Length: 248
Image (cartoon, rainbow, N blue to C red; front, side, top):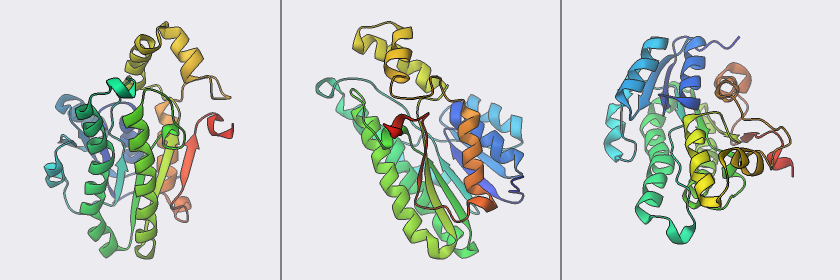
């Protein structure tokens, strides 16, 4: 059993997919969860499901941190989005926004909460990275860049936070059954000129030994472990949930 009673957790992108699963799992462990999402309806729905607090925020705007209250013990940096295009056709403004949401926002959020964590001598930062934080794929220049940067940021947080009881780790899944991945299938089909089923079989699942999509709850369970007592000596790590992708 993982007991997080009395802890306050912030989960970004918690309106659906991995973020929603993490919000549910941390709430099940006893944490009060701030459900952060740009979609007000989705945030409210998930917050109602877990007796949490909805926070509507656009992570591409730096002042989003004003909506985060003091006393945060756990941060799950999960929010993100994808754009699939060759580099020469990739819109620079989209590249910039992906880095703002997936690198700058985690930095700003962690910067905001670390002083309180240091004061209390306890904190958990879990960054939802990706197998694309460890490997690259074509047509995803911004996403791959952002996830690689998040891996580096996480390690730096781990080194600085260790003397203060704060851990920082990355959870790095392959393709998870989420709306983001569902949207990618169509985009990849158009880019590669193949059908949706072929995208899943020939592109998404090809590098992995286990031929299925990951369920969001599988990711959430590892997140909860890292936040619990048995994860206290784990910091600065990147934990792949990739069905053997990075074993090649």
